[in-house]
Length: 261
Length: 292
Image (tube, rainbow over all chains, first blue to last red; front, side):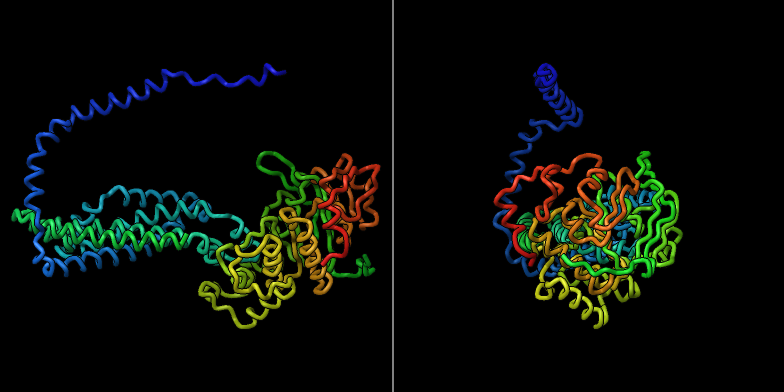
């Protein structure tokens, strides 16, 4: 009898070594193929030094000029995140297998969602600038679609992980589908949704500050111009202000999210 | 324990099972040709081993589980053939209590109880939480019946397990149901709160004449609270009678083996020749004296 419960053999060492070897070979091959080598980094170092030295001291007199575009950047991020988040609510419900049993509905919606998620925010911005012209509206749309994809994806995964008990209880009291969602699903998923909304806003403030590179409004336009005119001291000012804003928003959102969950 | 002797036959028929079978997709027979009539005001306790079909029987009554054959009538209406709004209307007349309470833990007690009212109102009204004043009074009254009125605006997860289960009883009461189903309502509670919950269910059954069907695995609780005991084995009814008729021999027959210690909560312990109940301090402390 005791022979039956023999300890399993320890995994062989060579497997581990082979795994490491595999990753190293892949890394080296990729590096050679794309000419991304430590040599490039070393050769670029002096240039980097020059650039950094030109950035300091930052041009403080530039602050009043960049303040308005910076506020516009935050506004673009805020409106885009809110609208994208609103759009994400019905879509995440339609994606969740525990809410919509029919795969005929869920699968196409998931496909569209994945499609939206494969397009990077800058590409969205470029597309919308081509359609709606240069300006913050195109940037806002880009942020909208980007945050919609992000929030919808995270939220539908949170919805699929909720406790099915309250949904069962709502079925038993004779609730219809909408009542079941409002009373059994939303109270459970809401803190996660709010947390993802804040997280998306954090990311979007950063994303919105480079949208101007493709003409989609915000601080990015001035950043592009400063770099183009080799005014690295002004670029440094923009980066500094962006850093402060992003840090404040990150901190605020972290505190809020901790309270929510 | 005193029982009010009622002439059950003259009471209105509440639930009828006509040759009901349930076969699960994996081939398991949950219910096998069940014929059963339950009258208004009865407190039926269903006993049997786990897997005997207790839960299937209970959940087929409000169609949380669809049956494979036969027909179930609720107060003269077939729930088996009902769908859409008609199904929801039958369901709102049947309250249900679950082993794991199934409350929304992050919502207030009040909102959980009010959620029992959604079947009575339009979608729009409930979505915006605009329950009429009578509903709030109804919910508070339901909470008063389980002695939890002062917790109305607490969050559900701040309550103990026993209190949460009583909130779920209040939610069922807010439906103003004709039937209450309780699927192992005390399985996740300690002996003391078990008695509170069972007392609440019994009082509601007696005061409001709500037909109550409870799945239990404690045989002494079944004997103490039921007006009728139904024994299930392998999806078939192997016993149907009064608590007095449900002797230890009957339970051994239902279970197909002698009764185990963990199937007795403590009070009214059956004969020692069948059960080896080892009395210990914690058990006797809890079960001595009258329930609260």
